[in-house]
Picture 1 (tube, one colour):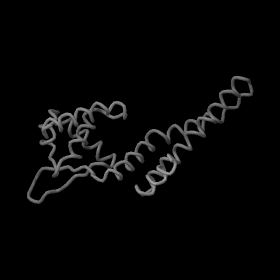
Picture 2 (tube, rainbow, N blue to C red):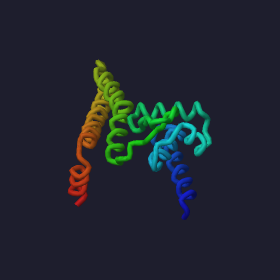
Picture 3 (cartoon, one colour):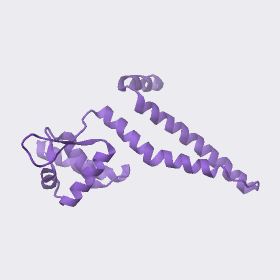
Picture 4 (cartoon, rainbow, N blue to C red):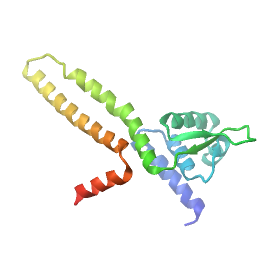
Length: 166
């Protein structure tokens, strides 16, 4: 397979998976493009390669910067801004884990903790509170697992996972 075809397939696949990850297609494709780019890219380069508008490119680049997985790169003598993706895949995994926890897991825990304060002694109220309490317990455990992964060294975590799978 030639590089152009492989790169095109990679960008399409990454973009298609974006919906399952809860992000938009363009954001995923910009990240994918920057991830494999051998040097920093300008917004214009990104727009040309992905055939997206300036507004779409800029909005998604800002979002990727907010996620902490893309950075602006200043190039001496250039007036344009350039962008690079953080390429350490383990650090990328950890940063995405931090952001997803902040945006998804922590709000669920907060909501479940509030729901657990239900003061209804009816059979339905007690069953509701029991299930919400169990969901909160599992969610907190998952949050701890994410926290361990975020704080861990790749080799330590993979070693522990390998031990568990034996």
